Length: 138
Image 1 (cartoon, one colour):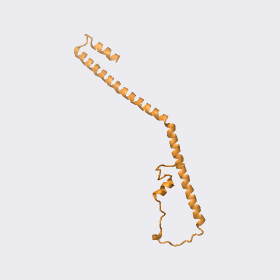
Image 2: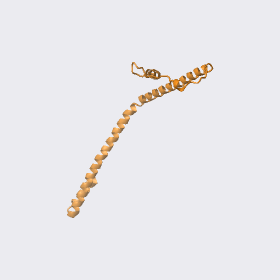
Image 3: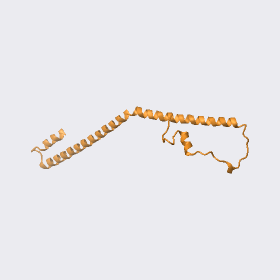
Image 4: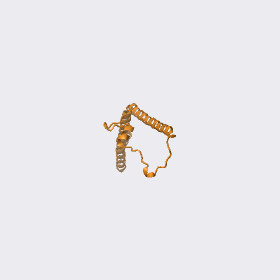
């Protein structure tokens, strides 16, 4: 900007042709306005970066809490997986213990019925109390 002011002073000299003087001063004024606009946009850009840094900084404070939530959720999923495996093992053991006593008979397809799994049983199995409407965790 200082150089622009110097050029304006030089162009304002009485030794400079008036057409050239007007053209140069107009050109310098346009350049000065462009630099001001650029500086304003740059300041907005820097302000945006600072805003993002503040937001990221506040999120960094929540990292321990977020990690605990994640680890707790993983533990809950692991628990359900263990319970699923345990349930399969119990069914397999029951089948193995009773296999010898079962007589293999032909059962017509229209007599095969699936075991009912009503919503209250699903709630009980997944630990959701129907009365309270909350998830019960171990």
